[in-house]
Figure 1 (cartoon, rainbow, N blue to C red):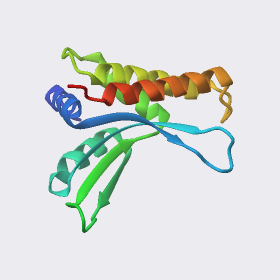
Figure 2: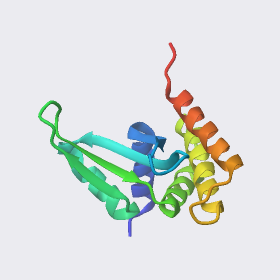
Figure 3: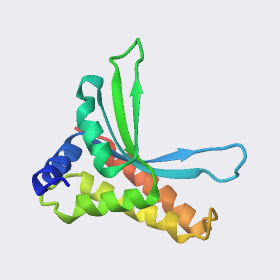
Figure 4: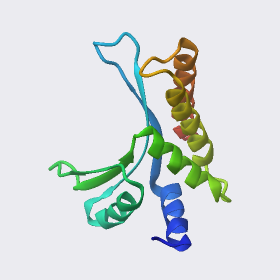
Length: 146
């Protein structure tokens, strides 16, 4: 069982390297886009051990890329709604730094809760509209203006 120092290090690492977003997927079989909330971290593959430890504790998935045009890399991501809620709560519960990831995680948590509130795969129109607003707000937060 990891100790508090481990969890503090994971929080700090995620604040620096983590990504919070919602993929908007258009499928020809569905008239509405699918909103897929996720958190992820991508690193060079020589730092894979860090993500393997995070994966062992939080689950999700690891993927290794070996593209000849780029350096080999490894990515960890969470997309399962219950895992995302657990991770968002974990990251937000002991947060004392003014990180721009705080509002991102709060928005992501709201999106996951919207996805979980609908019956089955049906998402009411008002929830779809809110998911689109959250998607756009996350994109806006990530833009860096000088």
